[in-house]
Image (tube, rainbow, N blue to C red; front, side, top):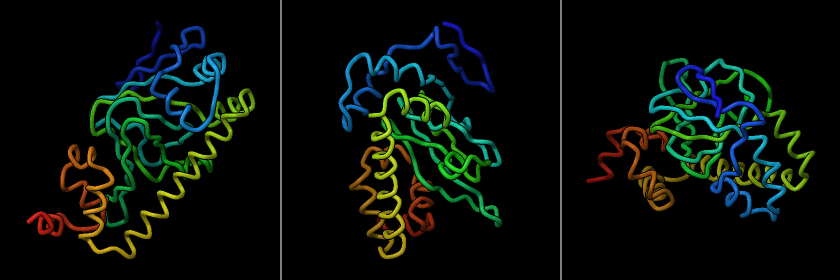
Length: 207
């Protein structure tokens, strides 16, 4: 298997060296659409496996973004820094989740958000152009990606409504209920940032 080392991570290259269809991604796709083994063989050709170490950046601010990432292993966060040098966490991603700077990815522009690994990570990447090619080769995948976008929009709307209408205690309780695995992995500081409250407020909620 040939690979190239780029900024500390490994990316497998060359369609002649394509890995077999990953079972995690296969099961993820099968939740939405029905495909046969030949379909999955074609799909596998469009993805690349990349490994990152803890604290490495997958995407940095002001970087051109043309790939979206599916998480096989690990934990990541997407965040941006405002004009007052304050970091704001947009979302997290763990196994079976997708992550990128979505605005930069869809608008084909440089990133405003950074994506960083909070653990050692194994990701599958696919470029914007390859998503288009894949959907033309396997039209069923267009429905898959559309459904993933729909679900992401619903989650975003729910998060905005929660930030605007729920109390700090309600946001914290909902986060624990909806994300028990993340709650165990993340520091209280990161959870507080994501929920739009101070670390001190979150500490009071724990007493």
